[in-house]
Image (cartoon, rainbow, N blue to C red; front, side, top):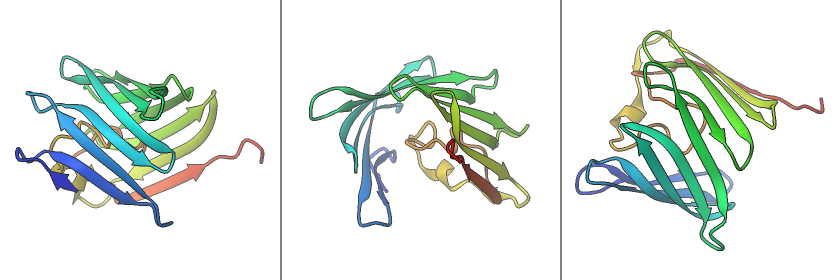
Length: 168
């Protein structure tokens, strides 16, 4: 993880465990909001644009660097507490739904493609662990992954991940 001179995250490298890496870079506007980025992942190289309505991140668009085609077009919908309750990707036709406990910690994630559920996560908070991603300045949510859209104050003490197979 790298940081710019203002202390905002500007590079994040994930090792995939198979010899490949996911490399993300982040850029910010004058209000320190994440507005642009790049991704180098096994699927290719991408330019990312983030757009806001007020303080809320409403769209995240990924463009393929090779041909400028739209790879992902994510739209966030919020609850009355400004937490992401749903994220749709208009390109992949995916929808992710999120619920939270009264303290704002994520409880459930359900991910659908073409109306078929493919992934779920269930989180519990029996131990009071600080959320480590809250120490990463500049990220409005756990970009680029689905499993924790809004950063709760606590890191889950338990997690159950479910992968569905519609052919089973």
